[in-house]
Length: 337
Image (cartoon, rainbow, N blue to C red; front, top):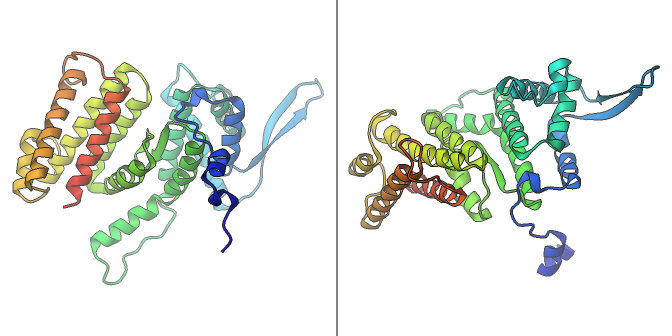
């Protein structure tokens, strides 16, 4: 089979797909944002921007939609719902002011595009987060589920979860490829946006762990981790400290559910040996030493930089990112038993 020209020379590949490092949304040029929009536009809504001139000389911009199938209608519903939620969550800011004054689909689409192109990283990432959450809610019932003959309850549940996340996973695959090529420092998972790591770390640790935690059994753990990622994205000292607190709380909740079947009871230092004693997590000598070290790190960072107690100092991006990575590794090691 013939190979691509870029496959024959790494230097050519690096020229065609340069490493842009890690950038925030605010570091992108207007042209970069326009390109990203066109790569993603099909996932948001299919429409063309039109202009109409009134007899008084005013130019009105509007969207002319095409395609009336179920999938296109869902996209439009999600766009309008996303704009509505954004305004309701942040009333004083009213980021989608056109929709606030004239609440219809056309204004929702106009504001969605305008926010994407002109607002700060905090607003754009929040809007995309809302969009992904609603994408899951609006599409998870699009498939008819029934238990196959001789299929176990767990296999049925895993198949159901996979299909419920079908549209989110497809969107994440597309978005992450685009973000990677433009050097944007975030990656979309089932738990929302996380800090971008080396691709190997994302593929072999974050994605498998967060996919595992999408099981209903771990709903509370997944929610706390999602809050940790949200706080990380705020890019503030307070946000990083909140991230530390939530990350350690997620580990605690994971162990509580693992050992007791529910949260609210037990501390990490006591839960780890109890889980090992019950054979719920690895108990070999090396693992014991690793878990002891991790428990000490979790406790120290939460005590010094978290928000559960008076802080000695605020966490920074490096502290928060390291702790998130350690938490993912800890859970991954636990679930491999």
